[in-house]
Length: 293
Ligand code: IPD
Image 1: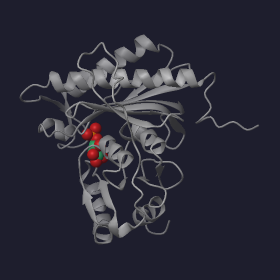
Image 2: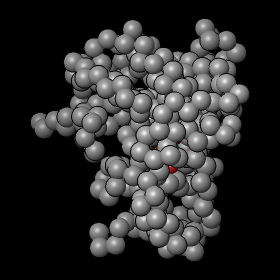
Image 3: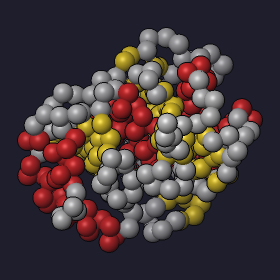
Image 4: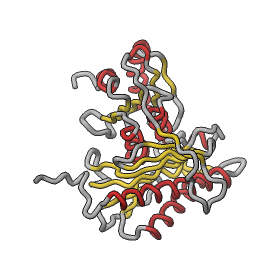
């Protein structure tokens, strides 16, 4: 029997995956509370990354530190990879991929569309296309909701519990992607990178895409875009240049909600990520594929 290193992790029982999902929920909620409740009136821009628009806030770094601490204390043998630079290689075959604030620019401007994304993956988390999520959660602190999934367990949304010690057990809502099959009736979420040259190319793609779909939304958080696909409040999401921490949890949430997530090949990656219901995903991918592929 052949094994797939991106899906097979030694000793991963259903019970273990369920426990990992619970940790994802708890950690995403804890970091979500931190960034919402401790947000200073004027968020400090601690440094800039690739360009002036790619802001790294103090809260981004505090959130990643908290996530790292929680993960290391619960799962000391697992690897950890975070947007703000945490990069620990583990020995268990599992890696946590975290985005401490997805939607940083919204957060900076106090626009209530930012998230914390926490996922556990198998495979090589540092190589595009070589890993797969097994459990994940996206907390939406402004709406006080957490969205989550584990492989084979469905995709769910739950309200944030009123205090940090109780588990969000009440009123889960199962998520299902939309059944929209026609491009011309599809509401598409997308996003743009920070690099001006990448943005110019994305604008060219949009000139081709916009006349062919119902409309486009630029919400500003890839993790929340994917959750929206999962809950059917947009029909599809497509973006190029996206990183593992932006998609790791949302990818699984879309799949567990009955959707499909692909890239240029069968897995999402830096070159392209497309998420939609089964009937829409191929036409959507064809629209976004670089010409000639
Ligand atoms: C960004 C957001 C945005 C997407 C960008 C991402 P960040 O992540 O997800 O929606 O369009 O490509 O880089 O920087 O806010 O964590």
